[in-house]
Image (cartoon, rainbow, N blue to C red; front, side, top):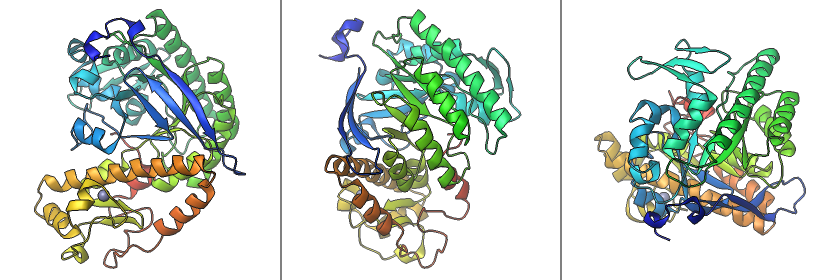
Length: 421
Ligand SMILES: [Zn+2]
């Protein structure tokens, strides 16, 4: 049915999630599923590109669809400040405003307002903060965030949460978790009050966010509390903030095990290809991360052999593709030498080409993950991917660019995978 004819909620597909395959391999809790949303149906495990400011930086909607993405992110904090949710609602919602035919998910802005150290004040009612753009004062409460997300109109909306910093004492992690729970209850009340519908008329699915730092007892308590609210899906928040990957993986395992198996599990802001493999193994279905897009703008290219930096001199006359194992439109046509030249000359096509390739790499990784789960070969796929990915990349003149892809000055981006987007 054309979008223009879907004027009543009954004409829109409502949210559903079906687990279609569960791995039978020992120690693998990963599963495949189908996530049906008003604007798209997507297969899980899925990667969702980050489109903070109503755009996945450097990509057109057609390019995202061509790669195969069915769902992307928008950000409540940024879109509230500019252009404002009322304008987006008048445009017919964010899908129409940015001419994106797929589904959308909006973060609640909790992560962003808690990143504004010194610019914010936490109260019982919500968070008062100053805009990073013009210093204007704003108050986010669970109710106001739900209203903003309703006007923006994403298919999936996130509850307003408090993302505690890392490191964080158990006592503070508990306080932040309990506040997140009280706010989640208020988000649900507001969501029910407006009939669980976007301003544009289609159904919205509210996801709760599990918090609790790296403390397994808190994570378990948080997962059980939120499961009790019987929401359409659940996210694991507050990770990729600087913790070790072993602590992160333990936290993910403890949390995922306590979340209802019939609901999708979304790990927010994580991560590298290996982080994603680790989380799929522990039962995570949905991912977002700025790494493929942000690192692309720093000339970093994800390949089967790890991350390569196209600024390096050794690519000056390298007439091979960005990744010999990739069949994306960029790798079919362009060379490393040309991409390196574009970056050195500050040509805007450079970041466009690397972004396209990196997003294709992530999308293709998820496809291969789903295939391996279906065929019961995830463990073998994991071992072979990690083995190849950790090979010494052929960046002999740049000792920092290897494995997980840390480059000078980029360490925080890569380890964190998440910052004020
Ligand atoms: Zn490619």
